[in-house]
Structures are given as structure tokens and as C-alpha cells.
Length: 255
Length: 313
Image: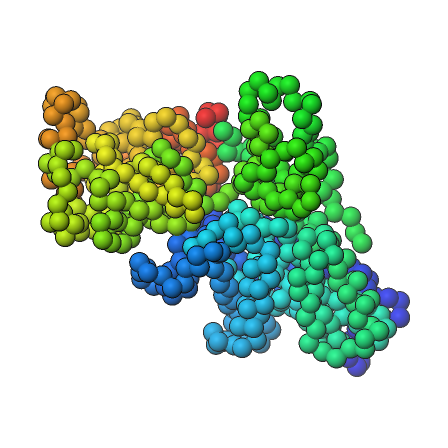
């Protein structure tokens, strides 16, 4: 037996999905109410990301750390909120267990990407002189790490009650020969060119498009279309979860 | 693409009615809280006659929600109250804070809001009475009154345009806290009432900051109860209001304080709004657990929260 077949002639992928099916999604908000203002966990297939949001709060001089607070704070932006994103990759997140250094350039680049996305999506002008710290914990990786991080951060920010224009939802799409595949897992990601797209809610406004591999320009459009519909589908699922949580909460707080 | 089962919920189907002609009831009461939940990016109304308040934004003539919460309307003003979120100070709120910084003529106080609050030297009662003038030596010995890490209860005196608060402790019910135990719960769980200093059964007082910071202490006679004439109250308030020394606290009182704390944490676990009646109900319900430590189990918390929920407020 040679390598596993990425896309069978019958139209099935390695894990039995069709081309336009996303992986199983499980998400929850307010998972860590004691340690953060907003928190979430999202599982997309075997990729699992946890997110904690602290803020908006008084900025600390070492951004987000437990550093001493000073009176004249250079980190405080007078006009808008300061966002900072930190990501931690768990050593057990891949099949081969290995310790990861904190300053992996790929992770730092991802954090910066996420920071830029949410600087646009969060209504930062409403929270001058304050700081929001987004901490991401990547617990399991099976492809689509960036998309899971964006979705988790989006949910956690909403849970924290931070004003946003809309959900930011992300999804990947790849191109296998001439077939578009939606929401790739790790095996598929390694085998074909793919892009990650994030949209602002169910609109056609794209807040991120990242393509790190070479792909024919004629193939780009079907990939983008598939990724966008994937984003819109994810918004529905995330929205349903937020509503479900909100309804439960309203019933209990009762005032 | 598969269908999402969650969104086909029947109660969510009908859009919250915001027809300005059909709100006969709303005009009488002034405020109507819609129990309908809106989420970020959701269209609230496309009618441009509404004024847009907190938690909303507009594109053209349409109003959209920017947070997950419920719609609140006051006359023509539409706003969305978030389900969760940091404490937003309002004038008159009774809050508990912790000194994080001693500045020149003011203290910085953490009250769990977006920004630290300020407590001006001129807004505190100093030993020697209300009429006492603040001198330069008071400025120099500010750390003697309140230093970093000290807890105090205060009232929000003013809110600046950027949302930061200014506090005052110009009343004997406010000031430095001692003889007790501090913990915090989300501010959204605190049910506002007129009185936030509650005398609980068992010889324990609860100071329930609107900001979600709580202080449980041994019941002590307030100055007003000691037979000092009301006109001389402020003069009698000497250095002891800034004392750091705890009084003797009996083990039984300590246990009662711990029990109350765990009961309130059980309410927090169940996301039940905290009010005086519910705290007492949770305390009564907790008596089936002999040891206070048994109440930290999730099962116990759930049961206690369930029993306290009987009280509507």
C-alpha cells in the first residue's frame, strides 16, 4: 500500500468527508470564568484551541505580564485600545512530543496576524487607555491552526463583552489537482496548496487571506469562494453557541 | 452544506418588535427589557428614528448590535446590554477597591473596571474631622493613611469622559476595610439594590461592591451605634479608621465567614445573580454540608445554587 489517497475517485477524502464538508466543530464559551473576562474552547476536527481574554483593563508596563504598574504608562494609547496576542503551543499538541521555545517566529507571526485582524474588528475607540490581552493555547494540532485560533479569539472576545463589528470567522480551503477541498486536516495541508481566509461575519468583507504556497491564478477564485462559504457556515455554528449560552445565562441571573 | 440545528430555535425566530407605533406599554413604563438575545453584527432595527446607545453601531440608517446581550430601550434610545463584561462605573455606586499606586495628592485604585479609579486626597476623611484642612504634611504622609495593597470601600463620585471613575470615602460607612476576607465574582452577577452593606445572620457583615468585589467581615459596631452623638461622629473618627490591626476574630466567626464565602462562590459557579436574599438562602442550604471545605465540590456548588435560585431576587 502506498500513501493514503487524499481524494478518492468516489469523491471521499481521507477522513470520509466530501469536498465541501467541514470537520466536526465543537465550541463553548465562558469556559474559564474565574481566570479571565472572556474564554472559549473550539475544536475543529482534531485541532483544539483554548482562548482567554483579559480586559479591557488598565495597561501594564510589561504588556500583559504581571509587571509593576507605573503612573506614566507608555503602553497606554490615548485614543484606542491596545491589543496584545500571545500563543502557547502545548508540547503534546502533535504526535511527536517536543518542547517548543516561546519565540518561534511562525507563532509570533501568527500572533501579529491575529492582532491586526482584531484591531480592525474590535471597536477600539470605545476603550481608550486600556489593554486587551488575548492568550491562545494550542492544545492539539491537526491542520488549520490559524483558523482555529481566530475563531477561538472571536468567541472569547464576544464572551468578554467587548464591542465588535461582527464575528471574525476563519476557514481554510485547498486545491487538489482541480478539486477544491474545504477545511483541510494536517495530512491534506501537507499535500496541497491551501489558503486561510477570515471574513467579518456573514459578509463578503475579507479581513485576512493568507496563502503560503504557489497556486495557479485560475485556481484561486474557487478556493476563495469555498473558504468564504466555510466562514459563513462557521459563523452560524458559533452564533448558535453564543445564543444558547446567553439564553441559559439570562434564565439564571434573573434580575 | 449541512444545516445548523441550533439556529432554528423557535423563540429566536421572531425579530424583537421595535415598531415605534406599537409600543403603547413601553411608553408608560419608559423602559422595556427585551429578553431576546442579539449577537454582534445582528441587525437590531433598520428604522432610523431610533437613537443609538451603547452596544450598537450604525451603517447607513440601520442599527446593528456590537455585543452579545439583550436590547434595552429608554424612550427613543436603543442600547444593547452585554451579558458579561467588565464593570462600568456609574455615579453613586458602592464599590470595593484595592490601592495599586500612591501618587501625588491622589491614590490609584483597582475597582475591576477598564481603567483604575482615582481617589483624591481631598475626597477622604482624615483623622480629626471633616472640617480639618489638608496640609502639606498630609500630602507627604499619604502612605500612612492608605498604601499599596490596602482595601477600601468607596462611592463613585464622578465618571470622566473616557470611563475612568473618581471615588470618595466622605462617609463613615466608607473607608479602609479590615477584620475580614476579600474575594471577587463577575460584576454582572451583582444585583443592584439600595443597600450594599448587609448584616448577615451569624455575626458577619457583607460589603457587596457593585463592581463584583466582596468583603466579608466580622460584625463590628459602626461608630454611629456606639452612642456617640451624630454631630460629633466625624470628630470621633480618629486614627482607628486607618488602622491595619485586625481585632480578635473567634474561630467560629472565621468559619462562618468561610461558609458565606463558599456559598457565594457556589452562586457564582451556578451563574446565579447575587442578592441579600439569595446569599442567606445559599447559606442556609449550605448547612447540609458539615465541613466548609465540602462546599468546594462542584456537585455541592450546583445544589446550593439550585436552592438559592428559588428566590427571584
